[in-house]
Length: 426
Image (cartoon, rainbow, N blue to C red; front, side, top):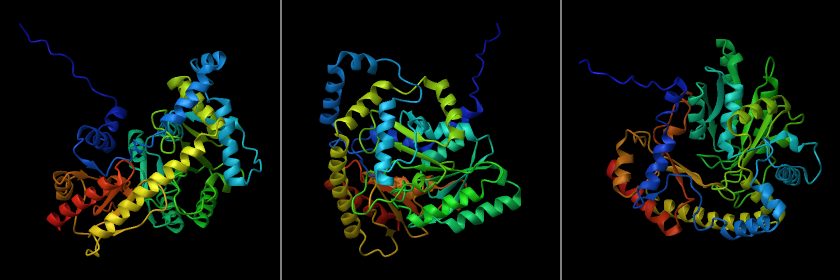
């Protein structure tokens, strides 16, 4: 008898492009090795999660029969209208001094966290081979999204104030010469306390990049995707107007926000304010996925805002994370005071500190340092994960630390473990 062989399954090209992304391995490692002091995963502080505010909101929501039934039903595909209206009102208060700017709640789309929105926007504006210009380094999960979509990510030089406008212009001109300019669809930024470097883009650079995007929107729109996940995590600096506030006709900037870092990642509520031309196509894509994001979570967040519980929680976590930021910075100063070759910048907000090592020392997944650091009981995100595959060359001597999860004493121990690993590798 002939042996019957089962046909081999061949995943789609997009499924193959999704494989091997670093975020899954890093999160699995953080969760499966409780003995490790994780300075890698950008999780939020476990102790300060808003248990009581959420309980208060849920009790208030469920105490009324009609509101309880509505919260347990399907909701509007673009999201709960009360929540959208309150988010618009907050934005107007923050960026425009309470003056209405004719931003309609109908321009806003609610999603389960901001990552789905980033994917939906990418899937709407990008064909395989299209280009997104990103700061180098940038949020590596977004780089994974672009890879999954078959798009090209090109890195633009950045410094302690984020993406450099002159470098952006230079790359656009090079793409024009090569004939690829028609494939450039978006510029991706994390303007506040960015992931991975913790830097904030000043007002003059925001204005310059919006001006560049509008000037290069000649034959087709060049959108600016402003991922503001960390805006609320501000510790010792003044707020800066959003890029949306600087977009006079609201045709260029996509404003993206989330409650995952500022309130609860478990509720999975994010949002975006989209230019009119982009809104309906993205909403149609979303409708094919889920008929609308989980409505119960949206109603909880609306109730939290209505009861003024959100800003109280923001004040609590700012104090919590500022203490942790201070603890990690003090530990780094103590551990590396005798090593001038190691450089880092104190962030004014967010959850991350970016470390630059001597150029001869590789911190990537194939280098000795990462394995040695794991042996010493801690780990980090290799900085090279955060560089697009084209443009600015990846700096393999960099790493990202996060102070969001660990208590101050563990942060100190983790930094000491990192120093032990470095001593063995330098």
